[in-house]
Length: 316
Image (tube, rainbow, N blue to C red):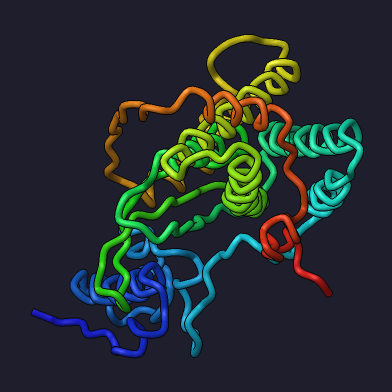
């Protein structure tokens, strides 16, 4: 039998998803040879067909001297939709609560219109995946809540998966998003904004109330639930409906390109139900009220000890 080997520097210097893409690339070459088509072009039709079987990423289907760079979410050079959303996120930093809320509502409307028009016109769309890494062996309740928000309101599919980390030798939980690249860029921004914003809001609440550390998760879940209620209300107003399905979930379920990409990347999935965590009432309710006022904007800045979330678009 033929064997494959990978260079130690590949495993040492690159994330595990890149290692897997390189492995699948080489496995596809091996498959072509086993099918008796090894005399065809090295990266020709036979190889491309073989790549379809394990779902090799498009960036890894050609001959390149350097390892391709997978989608990272931030710094994407794209069209006017992302530029307009980023501008509105910047306006959403306004100290005027009404102006900030209006800017966020307009950003949501642009996302909604873009995705509806993309489907109606059958616009050519680049689909990709993005891996978010909380860095833990289990996904916490607030991380699951954020992932659910992204799925229900930001036009991406979400899978909770495991990924090996070569440096530590551990297998950690990750959140994998799939969708149009523009939607992934927005979802990536929203994820990192929420993670940092939760910590900032908790520090303020703890300072003002003297809350104990054990109440933090309850407060965070309250914030995320309040934010969900706000997004749900906006979504229902835009759709003119009161059903359980959000427009984001309906669009993702109706996008044939995304469905094909999703099934190719995840041929075997299972659904697992998780019981809701117990919460402390007071911090949860306080978080809910804060979440109902939450506005996504361009960066957290000094609110998180100077940590920003990155730009949606690359500069230059």
